[in-house]
Image (cartoon, rainbow, N blue to C red):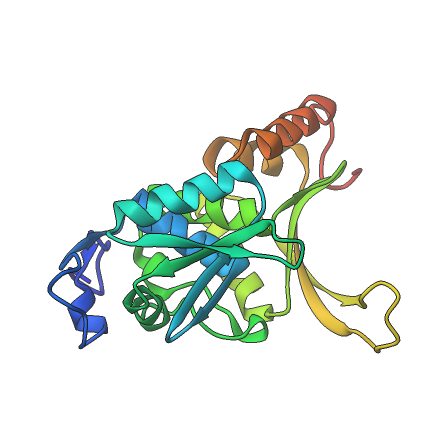
Length: 232
């Protein structure tokens, strides 16, 4: 980082990954391309030292992954599901995987966290990250915007970032079991934003990457103009 105690302007990958090659960018701006990829990686990524996959089947999101990867000096390779449909991208070369791990974007689903650099970022930088995160993990219902994770710490981190915009996210445990499964299931953590004021602030300051989710959010706001968190 340009200064780890101040607003991050750019990162120097060589500081984080000693083997970072001279053929890749030596500085990467902490701007929309990197922040969007970090947000999507947090929500829908498989991030290991040698693997950076971001999974999604929505064409606009796939386009965003490819375009933002190119903007930071990477390229993508398609990932396919069992029915031979594209289900995401692998970000190459794999030095970017090592970089994302070093930035704090790695880990199994139960221990994921928001990358530390976000906590000293500007509101604009945080909004870009959250927009991508909620595009991947966010759900718009008739009563709220929510996201769910196996990581309690991640939900707490997201709630903390939302406070930058005076948005209160309530975190509670939720038991989930796969459909038609005999397993006992697992404990997940759900963060919920509800109430007209909070949803309005979310729409104004954060929002989503795609028109599909943005339209659902706009429709919610149209129905909830006179509601608040106590009556929803």
